[in-house]
Image (cartoon, rainbow, N blue to C red; front, side, top):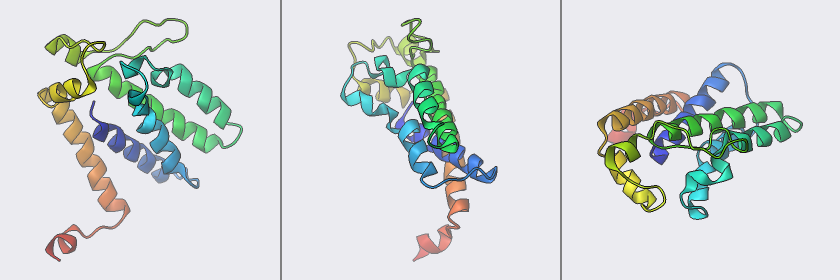
Length: 165
């Protein structure tokens, strides 16, 4: 999936936690790190979903460590990271049961439809194919739109006055 869906999903999760009364200082920042910046491994590992950062195991360990520091941050980091991994399983695969199994699991829509190879093709190749896959684009636009409306709501933005001035 494109980075925008990870950012949007993280914002929606943060909004839901706020709505449920679960609040803490720097909560959105911790969620942003685990929900979006998880993809920083793209700079270090190819294909990047073979990185330990793209495994539930890694984020379970991080969350278990954080539970002693801040249970709220632990929960938020876990939710944001698992949502990221779930979306990554739509267009690709992750090592879902690592370290028990290194087998990759996921719908792998892009590889199956376009014959891309995560070991040979670059991330930009995948992004270009994602942009040509209607069901992924529609779902991304839907989630991004929800996040945009929530953003406008949360920050009381008067869009018309901003656009007209």
